[in-house]
Image (cartoon, rainbow, N blue to C red):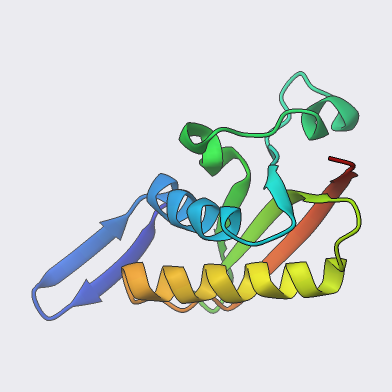
Length: 123
């Protein structure tokens, strides 16, 4: 599913990879974030998927965009945080940065930005 938008000139189709890249880049600048992890496990079990920090080219595997029944967009992000950070503050900053950057880049507001902390790493 892609994100669709319409303006006075016509339709705009934004790929999920583009949304994921902007979201991933935004959260990678937040202090305490180690990285994104995959939500698409395939052959990996949960513990193996947490050990695979995604590179920038694969951010779309750690960010899911869904459309609800009211045609509102919801974004789910799976992250690994650094040990010793204040998790609620880091998650709040992730949500704030992702919302700001997605709105700035695509002029879209997301109904929800859900952050799933999959692991804490001691660096």
